[in-house]
Amino acid sequence: MRQPLLACSVAVNRTAVIIAMIELSQEIEALARRLADAQSVSVEDAVTQALEARARAAGIVPESRRPRDQSPEAAAVRRTRIDEIVREIAAMPVLDRRSPREIMDDLDAV
Image (cartoon, rainbow, N blue to C red; front, top):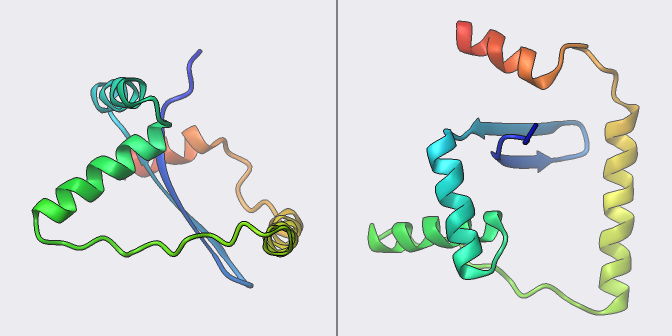
């Protein structure tokens, strides 16, 4: 069974991890995958580029991205920070044993 494509945003700080997901319809998912294939990019990149283009057309300027420092030292710092975040998340208790699908179904019923 194929996993549904989810648009997902993750915000992390020292005390909390917030994950916001939007489940996309099958039509939008198929369109995103076709666009990604046509552009030979990931689905995430295709969706990002499309949204940024629409934002610019609407007069909304996307936040500029700083070039990432590619030095080995900077990569090591990023890797260390990611490891810290993973440890923080792993240490958090599981408060709800339901599957993500069950949780989303319950939210949809509200």
